Image (cartoon, rainbow, N blue to C red):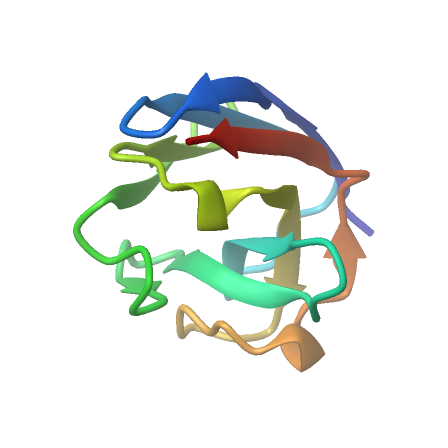
Amino acid sequence: QMQLRESGGGSVQAGGSLRLSCAASGYTSSMYAMAWFRQGPGKAREGVAAVARDGSTNYAGSVKGRFTISEDNAANTLYLQMNSLKPEDTAMYYCAYAAGTGAPLLSLDWYNSWGQGTQVTVSS
């Protein structure tokens, strides 16, 4: 079981940037993916960006070109660089880990370890 802890959320104006971090600890599978999900007020949780162990990435269409997912394996940390933020990006952002897959999936069903979330608020 992986333990995940997010940080870096906050309040910014539209057009601003934030970088989220997710510190991971615990056993790492030989095949895995890590991802960022978000859940806005009254909305379902949705996949934002994912990265597999081979470095392949996948992004939701709504964030493609604005968000970048990356990981520092030496530091066991996952990042999400968010640029050109919009009010519709306002949500609780969660880090997640999926063991046993080599693909950067954005489907909730694959992920079995979750962080507690960090709030991102974008004002217009």
